[in-house]
Length: 400
Image 1 (tube, rainbow, N blue to C red):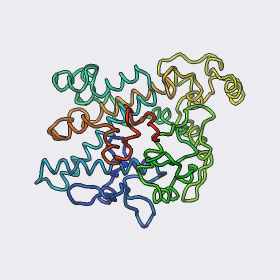
Image 2 (tube, helix red, strand yellow; image 1 turned 135 degrees about the vertical axis):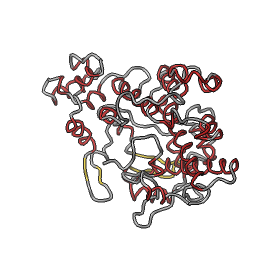
Image 3 (cartoon, helix red, strand yellow; image 1 turned 180 degrees about the vertical axis):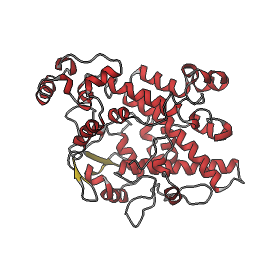
Image 4 (cartoon, one colour; image 1 turned 90 degrees about the horizontal axis):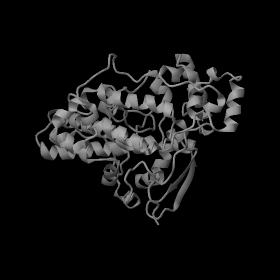
């Protein structure tokens, strides 16, 4: 069972049940518990951070949880200045709503075009959010919200498209992006780019990762990640540490094997059947499946020369990539469909994406902010590395 909801509600930060949500709050001015250095407080029972989700934690999650907890509190300060008599519960609820919408916007129009830096993808994701005419014209021509192409999904009418909202099995299958995770991490100073330390994935995961957080401040961590590159989502690039993952509870397993087994257990179609079901032509040969001659023969051998038996994930990681795509075009078809549905099915991004629900300040906060502004607001020490950078998910400048 999932510990977090399928909605774009920031539940990884806020929790999905009343007890967890209560544990992350100060109960004053709507704010979340967070230390002055941007770190979340530690639960003495577990040694892990007090946040909405701690399963499979590592420093990357800690950084994002801490960053958006700080952003939540900044939103609370802005709301309280505008609404000085508002209650703690009101401030918390409004700040959460605004923060979750900002996270959804960042994912839609910043992260996606960074991992798939293709002009068509950038247009598609911006159209999803605010339409072809953009945020400013959308605000003027409010009637355009009835047309998703012109006015965008956000602010349009809620539509579940015949089925209750969920993240589908197909989406879970194509969203397996573990090869993005590096095995090795070089942490550097944001002041002079000097190496602070070299770590492997187990060193920055679970309880071990908390020790790294004790030694390296968030400014240096964000800088270190910003000047680094993720792994390619391709065959033969699965993190070695995830193939032999040892968790804090002593469990050890191969995540790559589990990815394949889960698809088979749930009856997710094999690669060619999957393509047929999304109205794409099946590949007719191993030569068509991949342009890598070595992979071609390996796959042929594993699947006994039967192209119809190739597992979905293997096919997705093997197929040739269109120019500017960080992952397969087959996967992208499901990805962009579900990215749209996550917005279209959620009343807080459609019928209730209004100044009355969010407050005028909240609507403007989402409109005006980005991952760049969030990072600079809370960790100004990274600003130099972001000079000239238009998207925080693209490579940053190394300081000298």
